[in-house]
Amino acid sequence: MQKIKPVYPAGLAVKRSSAGLGLFATRPFKKGERIIEYVGRTISNAEAYTSRSKYLFEVNKRKTIDGAARANIARYINHSCRPNCDPEIEHGRIFIDAIRSIKAGEELSYNYGKEYVDEHIKPFGCRCAKCSAQKQTKTPR
Image 1: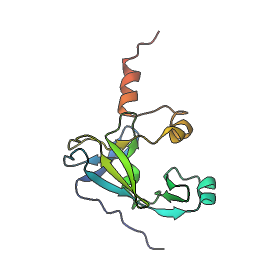
Image 2: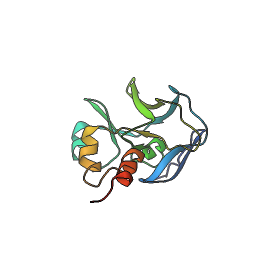
Image 3: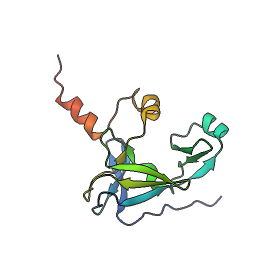
Image 4: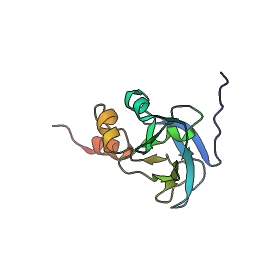
């Protein structure tokens, strides 16, 4: 089996982040600008139900994309409770668009949704910038 090398779109880089690895802007992005497409293998509902992948993205009731392959650079976009991006589904494809201006050096993020957050993030604590800042400002009793 031949390995597919990741293709980094212009203006993006994978780096260390508070949640492990993250996708960062290496140039500014304007509000509304399309940044990247979330790609991967299309899987059946039955496979999605039994899958252990944490990179599943439901497109509609009949289509789910498993973006676990490292060639899917968009998989490195982390969750945030105060995101700077939002996924847009168009014609069965998932695109990540800026919902505000993003500066060079800023980590890209979007809200993964209640179901994912409740199942995979809440049990360990959210590590997004908003939640991390709240934890640091709380004073112990």
